[in-house]
Image (cartoon, rainbow, N blue to C red; front, side, top):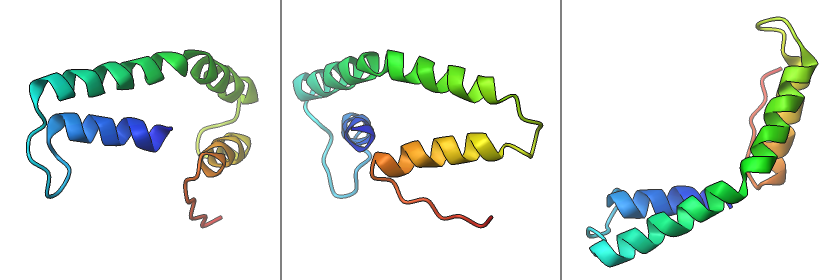
Length: 84
């Protein structure tokens, strides 16, 4: 889902390699779809913020926060390279 939003944003801005500028009506539709998807993530985002805040870890020692956020990224299909 996050990848799709980024793709819509890049397409709308005409930044995807090898792509011509998107027609204004298609650009508007892509922006509207991205905005709808972003609005649909409000609750999830608030839960994430509240969870991270609840850990109350010291700066540069955010191990629980790191585990939590990398877990979300991996669940969404992202690759996480760890050095810890």
